[in-house]
Amino acid sequence: MTVILDDNDLVAAVYDGPFEQPLWSTFLDRLRSALRADYAAIIFRAHDAGAQRPVELVSGKRVAPGLRALWEEELHRSEPQPYARLRDGRVYDLAELLDRVGEPRAAIARELFAASGIGELRMVRLTEPSGVSAGIYCTRERGEFRSAESALLGKVAPHLRRALRSHIALERERSRFSIASEVVERLNFGWIALNAQGCVVDTSPEAARVLRHGKGLKAARNGRLLAVDPAADRRLAAAIRLLADPSNGHQRARTQAINVSHDPWMELLLNVMAFAGFIGIAMYHKHPNGKLPD
Image (cartoon, rainbow, N blue to C red; front, side, top):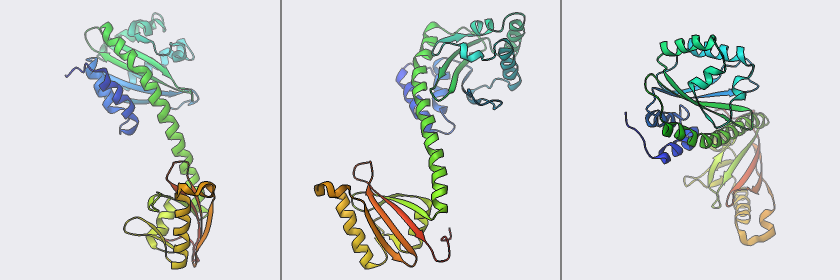
């Protein structure tokens, strides 16, 4: 097993983790290698999740589900919210966690851990403002973790907290976007994002169907947005130039409303987006026979 000595490798993998599938898989592989562990995992819990099972991301040999369930049961029997009492960002060893359940249950737990190939464990708990908590776990069957290895786990933990916070925020925005897109699509609205040259850079599903079928609007081979009707296309091009030209001063911020087609009925509302150099178009599309086919 290759031991990674450069902390930057771990930190980079933490921030790349939300863009991987499975999530944080490279980070867990590298952490397991760096700590010479048999098992490395991130386990997520939501405080308001009720009976919902925690989410577990794993590298290496998995802990037996029965053992983990029993361990959770023992912890909750001794403390209603066992993980809430763990200090955020502090690295705990197995003995410290077993102390929380007390004897004789701790003795039973030791036997179960030993039978499952867990002789040593390190764990650090993280909390995120939205109410999600995460624990990073590393275990070995034999050999103690060195102080430097425990310190490394503590060092990367704050980075995971930040990456987790960003990941949760992005997932919530995706959920909101998905709900909003469905509502907008049912109302025959759509949106198109253009660059300063008038080329399409992104669309909603409804707008993509309109462009694909070329009813009222279409995209040229070079990506430029075109109105099918020549007169409407001239008005559209003029509006895009006005909004994209920074020399127009206050006029650049004005919203431009254009009707580009009567059959099907199609109206556009153009404005400069918050991202410099991009133009957003809200499109209302009413096809005479309902929605366009996929």
